[in-house]
Length: 255
Length: 289
Image 1: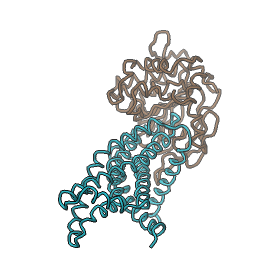
Image 2: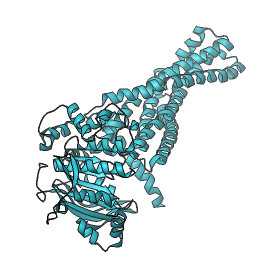
Image 3: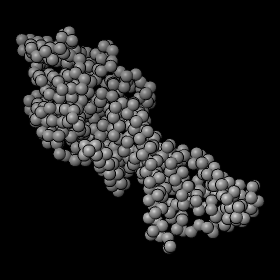
């Protein structure tokens, strides 16, 4: 029983240690600015298209679903409001993060994993470079910076998708849709909608790096590390969004 | 600590009762030995006998569970990574998998050690580095010329063959003129001709700069070459060491044999050949020398 718990607890301890070092390194020299910008390009610009596409369709689907329900009550004019709230508070951050997890937690884990099994990480340490400083921290900074931006873009394109359905199928005018959408949002929602991607970004980068850095067992090990990174970062995104929403509602929302 | 010291002068690597475990697997089992400047150690052993781990423990890439490890007279067993960097600047390592950075060109790979200010400073102050402040580019070119791969400067590691990558690994290991060189299975997976080329390069580095060398290998042949041949700077060739009564080669070349994490043999080549231990005999016989 206790032996079974040993390895997950050890893994968790390693993860906490890696996270601590990666975050501490943000405030230490040397800084690898080139690596940070390169990762921003890979993670941010690289994910832009797919994130926009998914954002668009999630807005469209939300509008379609809500249109049917709201028409029953003759309240189809409220479609903008509902699309805005669900996208900004929940769907935008979570869908974007899950996509980026699939694209980049896997990418990070496989890149670092290959470096680990070909002894490049050992070589780096032997040559006086801290691999956490050189590899983990730039990925952490880059992801934490670009994921909130990607989420904003995805939210906006989702709202535009919602408008497309509202105008073509429900006959709403531009101002009818966008005014209700705009008025529905409070600073509270925006803050929540930006806090989430920031937290998810930290999880994606650190989980990807964690599984990459502890890869063992050759190319097969790289495959395993990649799968684990995607599965576990996706699960954590959903667990954390539930947690953040619960705490947020308790603390910031007047009942 | 200068690398130009006569054999027996100072301790380069010292293991005192060092053990290392990975879960239930024993990687090193109470290993003790001492190596001095100017000496060559050939570490033989079957796959999984702990040879690679011994090298990694020697430079602090892996921390031993118990025992003491000293590098250049300084105990490194409980040093923090940051402090280890200062000692590792004097060590060059050729990794079994090459350890070349895929995303960098050959020139950038070889220049990598010199991008670290500590290593560059050491290279410039070291007598092995000719004491000059030559540019990084000059050093990289010289190092690649040393392994006869100067034309690959702008290529990437995946464009080279296995043997060439190994040679680039050597170029990177020696670029900062280290006082200690560690070679992890430099000939593994190479054809005999390429393997001999690699050994010739290792001899050349050792004999030109008098670098303390530890070579891990499973081929007895490699060790035999290390013990009996030397690089002649005048002819530019490797040649057999003349044994004028006194066996000069074996004064500095020592053989270590590992089995399941334990050091089962330590001695000269003639002692190795005379050993009756069946495990040790297996290596000598297979080498056919």
